[in-house]
Length: 167
Image 1: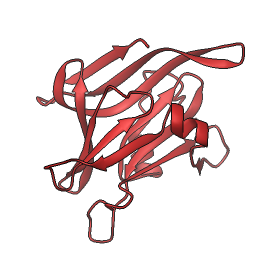
Image 2 (image 1 turned 60 degrees about the horizontal axis):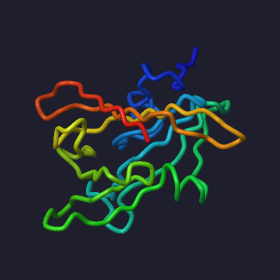
Image 3 (image 1 turned 120 degrees about the horizontal axis):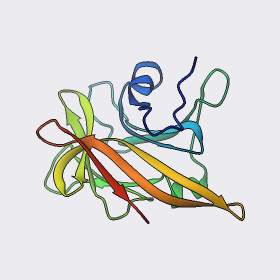
C-alpha cells in the first residue's frame, strides 16, 4: 500500500531518502497528487558538493507505476519549483538557494558530517532546518491558485517548527 503524499501529514522525506535520493535535503509536495519535488545535493566522488551544479531538482513521480523521475519543465523551473543557486559569500562550501515560489526566503545549503542540510528562517527562527514544504492549492479556470504554503522543519534546539504562508 502506497502512502498518499498529497496529504500534509504524510512526510515523504524518509521514503525519498531511503528509496530514491540518498542526498535529499528537502522536498516540496502538494495536495494535487502524490508526486514530490526533490532537492538534493549533487555529491562528487570526493564527498563534496559539486560547485558547478550543487543542487539536483527533479520530480519523483509516485503517481506512476514503478515510480519514475522527471526533470522540471520550463514553467515549473521559472514559477514554482525552480531555484537560483549561488555560492554563499564568505562561507566556503555553502550555497545560497532561493526557490522561485519563496523568493523572500534564503536557504543556506551545505553539508554537515557529509549530509546535506538546508537552513533558513522558519517562523522567525534563524538557522532552522527545512525538511519539507507542503503546498495547498485549488484550480480556477484551469489555472492553479495557491491557498497556502506550509514550511516544516526543525529549529536549532531540535524542536519541530512550522510556518504557514498565505500568498
